[in-house]
Length: 276
Image (cartoon, rainbow, N blue to C red; front, top):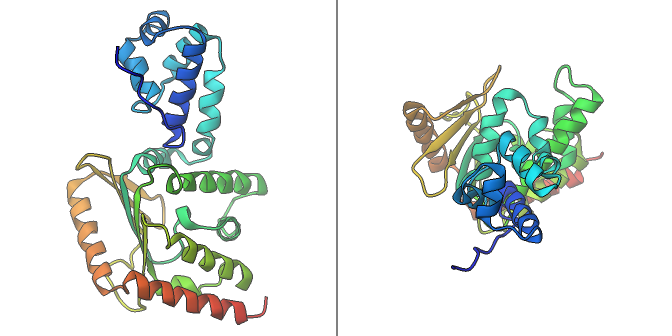
């Protein structure tokens, strides 16, 4: 019998669940085939969940919980808590973002959520119409939970292009802006993150933010487009081609990473010198 595949709980939400499922199964003295027979699944289906290749369905959680006598539903809910706070339309994007091999984004107005400090994110959420304190708290926790994909064992390659105006837009005041830009300098040191600044002026991306997620070991791309109303999440090939051309054109005029980091550093000094 081949050795069991080593699991890395830090690789993803599904990997963390799979590692715990395997631990519980082995503690119960069951093989994957044994658990499968009790829960109504094949050994390969149990194995796919254990190695994080497949997310557990509601039925899978229910049947395996009966077979193992363990709180699998509660575990999966705790791992997925940030998804519960998201709008229905955003759920498909969260799946694509979490599983992405690479993420490319253009942001004309604000720092992207994956790089926001808690204070910066809260200042933005407090300006949203109709959000009470409890809703803001839930959305803030969800946004910060999403950021874990950048520090997991195998994070996605993350390419970020920011409009220069973002660095001088006073979100929350000088201290919050200073800390936010220091955060950008910190993450820019990571080998899998590239940050570029697009100088002020007209460019093809002023109509809204763009994010492109590429699935692992696949040519599948999912596009997220920010709009004034409900954002769009699509895999339409024509949309992907259009936004790719836009992003390439913006990057062609943007500062390279080294110059961008230096620009951000100077803006940190600017915000530091401003009175709170």
